[in-house]
Length: 215
Image 1 (cartoon, rainbow, N blue to C red):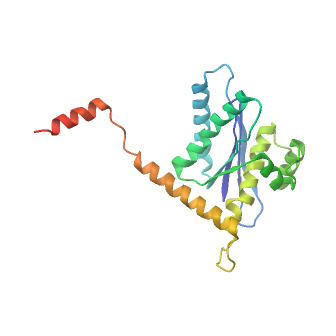
Image 2 (cartoon, rainbow, N blue to C red; image 1 turned 45 degrees about the vertical axis):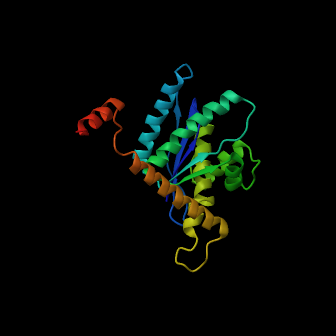
Image 3 (cartoon, rainbow, N blue to C red; image 1 turned 90 degrees about the horizontal axis):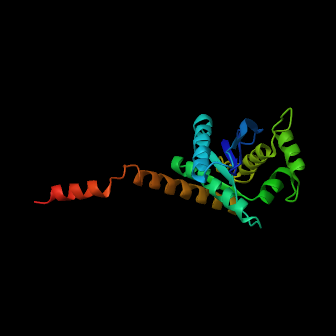
């Protein structure tokens, strides 16, 4: 299974893709940081982020998407920019019918290091060890994205798929709930994509069609 993870941000957006067979060792597919200029208008920055992320989606073909879950901060401007950037990979996942997982920083730290209070150096060190990298991924946004992908694989989709593969063991309640939510989200995404597949027509065009249909 291949997981594409995004550590959202307008100035620096970390992107990491990790893959691994069921029960096997995880491997890095790609990692990087998408940057947009602080002096660029907001809508253009979001568009740049969308274009770059779409290219990563098309190139890596993930099976699932993970995005860092927002949490409260005192800096309103920072949290607003992060929230706006978060929507881009979420929409990309929805348009492709891919399951989406949201994980808080504490959940990611706990999954990768065993402690929800681990610092960035500890997270980076464990990511480097888990993926068998020769050197630590840089900058920190890149390492955070890989940690998020590892977390999702282990705690989310990976655990759900590993459980009950041959029907020998029942799913744990948490895994069963995750699988049900995952399937429901995929169905909603496919339904929405089908509904809006037909291009919208302008009101003038609709009026003309209506007038032409009258006797």
